[in-house]
Image 1 (cartoon, rainbow, N blue to C red):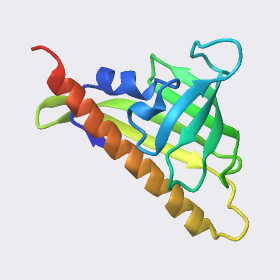
Image 2 (image 1 turned 45 degrees about the vertical axis):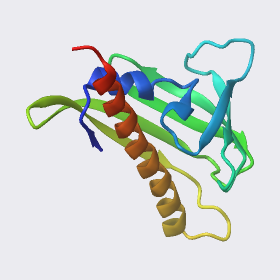
Image 3 (image 1 turned 60 degrees about the vertical axis):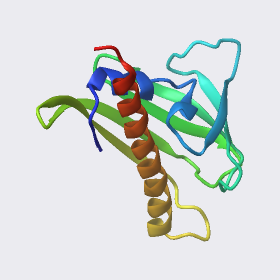
Length: 150
């Protein structure tokens, strides 16, 4: 998704492993697990979803956080949902839209097909969630950009 906000601003939101609710509309809250509240590769978080979502919680591990290349990867390691062996990689790259600095955000994923579903059903569900998250990321990024002093 192309976002009309500078890459550094968009990345500053995406990289917030400890606060996905900033731009993920189905997330109610997030708690870091373990003894540390710092965000580093290998740390884990527990996410609580809003009512109406087909799960109440997810436990996720941060696999990649590369600030230089702007690459972020998460793996689901637990929770009460059907997304088994799910992992995703998000990249945030510089882009130009209408002559202005912007960002191109790409998210790819792998997941096991849940029993009772087809591969297409699983893919459509995850792609729907990703689209919702990316649209929300675009809105949040653009609002932050407008709020910045000139």
